[in-house]
Image (cartoon, rainbow, N blue to C red; front, side, top):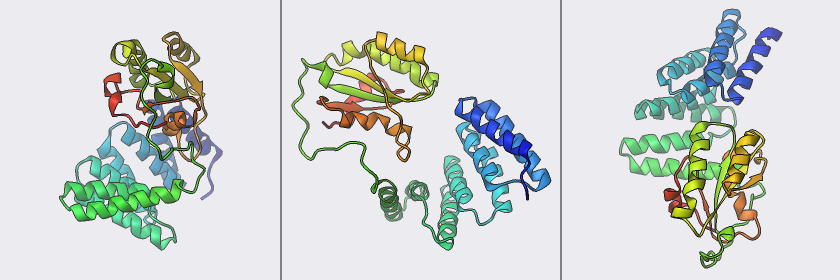
Length: 279
C-alpha cells in the first residue's frame, strides 16, 4: 500500500517530538498515525513498534500489550513485536506468557535466517529466574552475553582496559581520581541529582573529581552551571553502535586518569563506591 506524504510527515513529527523529550505529545501524534494508517491499510510494523516503545516509556503496559497484539495480528511474522510483547508481559509480571512470546520471537528470527536478539535472551533469563528455573535462566543468560559479544565484540573498543590492577589510590590528586558520568538530553531526573552530586562531592569524596561526558543534546546553560560547580565537562559524541549510555566509559581512554568510577547521573555520590574501577 503506497504511503501518503501526510502520513509520513506525521510519523516524522512523532519521532521528532519523542527525540525532544515530549513523550505525551509524541504518543498522541503516533496514535493518530496508527489510527489513520489502519483506516487506509497503510499501517506498518514500525507504527505499532514505535507506539509500543513510547507506551512502555510512559508505563502504560496494558495499552502497550494491546497495541503489540494488534500489530502481531496484522504482521504475524514480525519477530520484533513478539520480542517486545515478551518484555511488556514480563513488566506485568507474567513470566510464563513472556517466555512464550520470546520463544515465538526466536522461532520467527530463525525462520527468516537471522538470530534472536540479545534482548530476547535477557527477557528469557529474567522470566525463567522468576519461575524458579535456574538452569534455563543460566542458559538464556549465557546466550544473551554471546549475542552481545557478537554485536559489539567485533567493533573497535572505546578504550583499552588493562589487565594489570589499578594504580594505588592517591587522595592528594583528585584530578586523577575521576567519577565519570554520561549525560544527554535535559531530563530533570538526571540534571538535578548531578548538580547535587557536585555540591556534596567535597564532603563525601574529597579525593575525587567529577567528570561529565555529554553530547549536543544537553543545554549549554546547564553545562555552564556544572562548570561553575567545579565539574570537568567534556563533549563526546556517542559511538553509533554503543549508544549514548556508553559515554561514561570514555574515561578509560583518557590519558592521565588514575582511579575511576563510572555511574548514572541519577545516583547519589554515596553509591559511587560501587562503581567500576580501572585505569
